[in-house]
Image 1: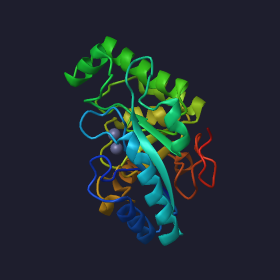
Image 2 (image 1 turned 30 degrees about the vertical axis):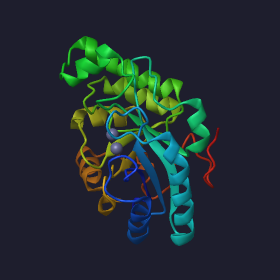
Image 3 (image 1 turned 180 degrees about the vertical axis):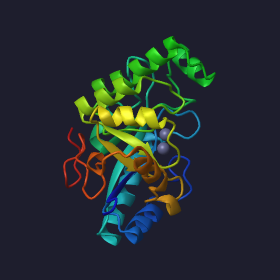
Length: 250
Ligand SMILES: [Zn+2]
Ligand SMILES: [Zn+2]
């Protein structure tokens, strides 16, 4: 009984502290079978990964495949949701270069819709803001092939039932984030009752935290989410963008 993969990790290519190899080394030591390197999306104002660095990241991942053959390392990105229409900062031309797309709401992102950006950043939780955020999540999942919705509800209050329904329908995993879960137990119960599948990730910003699922595990046990609904527990997830073997489905 174990978690087999960690699909949301950061490295020095955004603002993490470790290299891709550091993460692969830790994953191998921890006995993980898969990890995804998902640095922050291209439009992030302060630490977005640069498109020109993607080939270097891929080369390092290829080297890790030789050094740590027990661990499959995917190249992904943690994309940013830009507006309530669900636009994200991954272009069609980026997709062939990425294995996995994790996506979530973040502050300080170029191209973010003005009203959407400020209502969240000022902490407004009005019905209008919640409706706009819910639209942003649902439309992002509907209009893009997103493998994992990262930390739903983080600085982005939304209708969790609607977001969970969209995740279930479009086969996007609803993340239980390893740094912090911003949802209440009752919101998580609601998401589980909609039948969506969850995935637990460390969101590690240093290699030492790769494979740390303790925060998610505590909530799973407290809320009594069935382990059968956890996509990376005792099984490997089936992502919309990844064919086993690593080639992106684009
Ligand atoms: Zn994030
Ligand atoms: Zn992250």
